[in-house]
Image 1 (cartoon, each protein chain N blue to C red):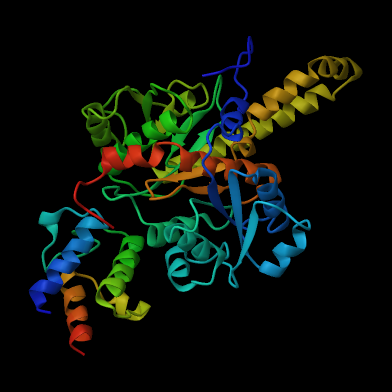
Image 2 (image 1 turned 120 degrees about the vertical axis):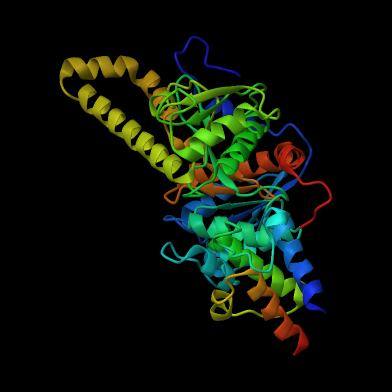
Length: 81
Length: 358
């Protein structure tokens, strides 16, 4: 899976599950400040990513995911592994 | 709306009788969290048994041996699912909802999500029920935040009040969605055909309130989906039922709800003390006894059982933590009402994003 493909998947989760405005979702977008998601949204995002990509994300790893780019990069390391 | 003929206020029974009277053939399966609440599992099981019937199958989730010990032999319309864990009142909601997959709340909500049940009722940790509902039952696509919508005693008849605790902080757009969901709740659950909507603020003028409330006023006023927007209302208008649906953020709503509950209790206590004051007042109280009991019932929050978490893919009922059997039975009936009514399809139609899926 390419970085762009992973980005599209993450964007899909944000738009469909968390009702985030599509045009706000960029690689640099910060979850809390730019996308106005709360802590529960982030847990929902993490769980949906686990389901969609078949990976496990620990609470510690999840705490480091602060931007859309962080989420995409994290998935890339796991999917390639 | 049916009222007690000639009375200055309406007993809440007009709402709850409608839930108890099953007028359709549909069998609804309601999951009841037998481990949640101050009086679990005894009062929870008792209330669930009171509500159970051929068209209301109850699934009790919790410590199976303890629950079974409370069930009469040969009990019908009730089943038990074991849950080895409990989410306590002090646990961080989202973390507990994710980690405690063996808890009664998570097991019960997953059962609903997987199609094994139609509605969920819990008197447990409210934050955890909200978080686990979002994670396992999921929001209706298009719903930005679910809201806790309660039916609150008011004069002359109860009102719908949301959000009373799911979202401490909100944006204007969330308040607009709460107005739409509250309108659907009043129509479909409370059977008020043309509900009026009020936005709680600190003044009637559209320019009064926080920036989010001022913006929300404009959004709601210009939204075609909201048929009857009254405008801003103030705290004093809640109990006087100026409108059918009151919209606010979860922090204000929770403070408002509990202030009113506490005030009602204090006033009823003072009334009782006044009646017991002397022989003369006791005689007067005796003459009014039946009418005062009706007034007490009209102000009793337990009569409605619980509040519905609106915006989810299934009815989730949050009961008072201190619910006794009556409150739980009413909450279970509210779960059934939520499942057989058009509440969810209405919210999905009005807030749904076409072409998306969970």
